[in-house]
Image (cartoon, rainbow, N blue to C red; front, side):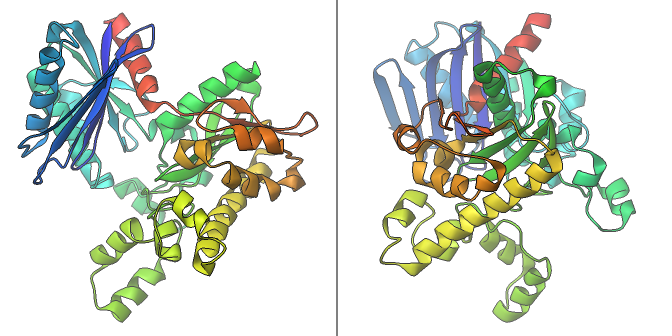
Length: 396
């Protein structure tokens, strides 16, 4: 069964086509600069790679181009071969706790959630509508990035503000990277031969967006991202947690709007803002000896993560495993080393050589006498989406 996993951004459309249940990737690609000049479609299948520029005013045209390319390149003989399409949907609010087949009623509910993730949810909806129009025979499924965190107790998801704001406006912690955490946890349980109901773990998704998640007995107990993806630990271009009063202070000092300040916190802060060099941790690390701000950015990034891990360890009471994922977590051993060095109080020890040799591959990097297993587990959100779609399609 061919399943298409889709991740739509405001100006991008990333996709991966799977053969399920074999989990084989048939093709993958993305459309960039949707709605802008110089739109580009990249498709990779087998040993071939296609790069083409084309006029692309909106997500519907991006989807039309993608589907045309699938048939033109003989990736599929007929579009009817695609039986399901899974859409990553960033924020499902309090409505959607699990992956859901999209019909008109579901789509209407999803429309109401645009305000919760204005940078992501509207783009997700545009892509859903485009695929439903072009492939009406395929099962459309929404896979929610916030769904995994709906098991958090209220003491972990509420803010210390008037309770009626939670009741009336759904002001609460939603978290993110839930699709990734589901995959990491599933792999962790498989690799460590552990029972879900008996596993306490701290999972790290460290990519351009980054967060920490505490898993208690197989379910999300707490996570660092809050109401929006700008909160939590410091990220590549996002600030992470800041005092809310800072917005008003900067608004006055800089003479710009709150919206503009939020844009700075989202796009010009984090590793980029502190280092003044780049959002790429590898570039920043390369300049750490000659540039004090590079070292400062590294220290801030690591320090914020360690603080969350320490808090979650206390909250969990017992930690069985720590898992690194995401671009930074999977590919930059020195960041894992710096984090773990500060966690010796938890009995965490990693094997230096094994850690240094592990990049973009699955490995147990803790020593035999470490009290906590430390894993590197490359995440695969697209496969998680495809698996959800396949399971729902089998029930139809």
